[in-house]
Length: 342
Image 1 (cartoon, helix red, strand yellow):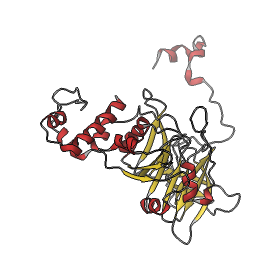
Image 2 (tube, helix red, strand yellow):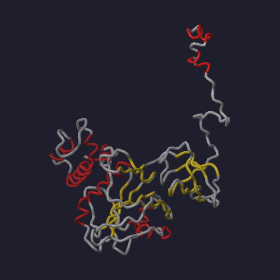
Image 3 (spheres, helix red, strand yellow):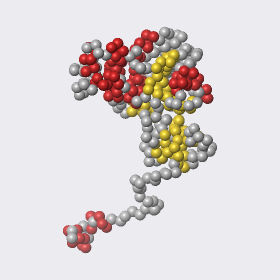
Image 4 (cartoon, helix red, strand yellow):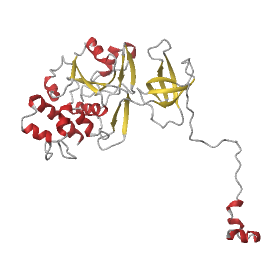
């Protein structure tokens, strides 16, 4: 028996006795919350193709007679920002797709890839651009605006980090010979598509995009949205012109939206002038250079593989002339990309 029980009769210490505190009644009769969530066995799977202020446009029954589009909201238990364009999700509620109907996304399925960027190179907080893409179409103008090799390097780093195959699409080649610019990427196994200001090689592009989910990225004003409109006329993406004074393009696309092709998807993204890589793991870049990655297995722990890295097996192989002309170009590309991160 506690000392409090011995003295509580005289009332001297009764005000400190917690056992006598009245429990506040629950006037609403609400049940306490539980961490156990319903299994939602009756849920349907859909692809998120657009996100707009807390509403998600979703395609269900893709490729079947039951295919339909619907609008959905996020379940309360899912964290903010957990659903992005390209996600495959599970839906419950009103999945009819009728006007005024609203389904609910209760879970996000495992992603095959995740393309991300950060605000700048010192920021490790990632901004997710698109999920489940397997190709990146890097759109670059040969002129007006001038091509930026270092920005393309950053796109390549992000693609390699995400495990996405990059494709380079050069526009406005009638205004400037692109060979000097393309020399920056001579060591990469990079597919290059060329177009003029008025004519896109649509058949070649459609063949490359067929059966793939391709995210289109590029500096403002390079013709990315114009290209998307040529591939998908019903997209009607806003296009702009390059400022004659600054040489910069004006942002026209303000959101990331997926558009369906005959067999595949093209994802248009807002034009950017910077692409932070604070979230990237350098090892993912090396893995994209399989021939050099195998040599790097002999490098000391923590090797940066940069030109001044001590005892770097790749640099030593280059000094011995074992890489060949193409290998040296690939090493130059690898070290430039790693320097971008450093």
